[in-house]
Image 1 (tube, each protein chain N blue to C red):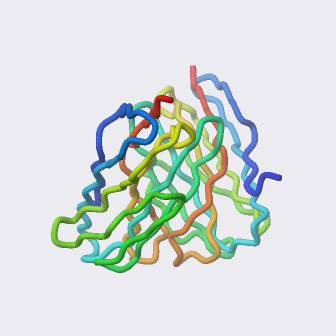
Image 2: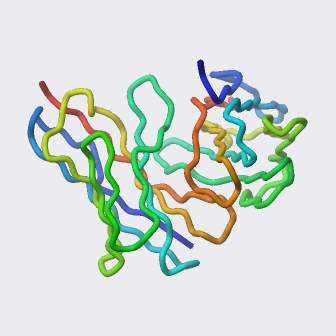
Length: 115
Length: 113
């Protein structure tokens, strides 16, 4: 089946430092799945951060970016300068395009940004 | 105002009992889903519904039964509860079933003793 592997947390960085959370995927049901990053801030529900549905494209939101790389089957999340408010759990997810609506999630990466 | 309501927030049950988890969405979406997250495991897809019709079921057990009384409701009935059913259950929705941009509720944390 499909799977998603992401940076094992917890990850701690200082404010204004750069960040990268790695995500690689394996999609057995389809060559080019849709890729997503979701985020759960403390005390809040899971929400979509960004998505990319076309290989080679980049998605961005709230200063975060991720590029869909079909050669390396990766979708790493990056931010040039993190803020304390970015502390959250980040989930990489894959949608298999077989019209099931199923998202396959990674384990999540806990990010703590120190002031 | 919350757009996806899940009730209750916490639920404690005894082994062998039956519980219903409630989900209502006020986003005007036509597709709804259930996911489960057990301790130290990723979110796991369970069901998808479109216009109140079951589209996909990836749970291995018939003890889990979704129930859709209205388009914006998708409850989850769990019978003969087991300790392994302890998890946080998340309801989600999307505009259409073929869209993967899903909006999630806050979850119901179920503990089975």
